[in-house]
Image 1 (tube, rainbow, N blue to C red):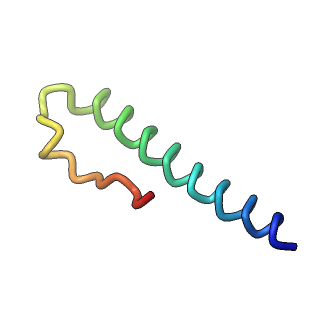
Image 2 (image 1 turned 180 degrees about the vertical axis):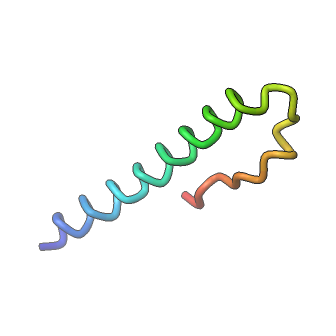
Length: 46
């Protein structure tokens, strides 16, 4: 049971990171001229 919970939490963290990376990627495509500080996307807490 504990292993299942560990798997679920780790996959959720991975989903957060992939979403973060996708957002950054799309924002760079949409706003290539904006500095990264303007794009208010925060890294998920590890």
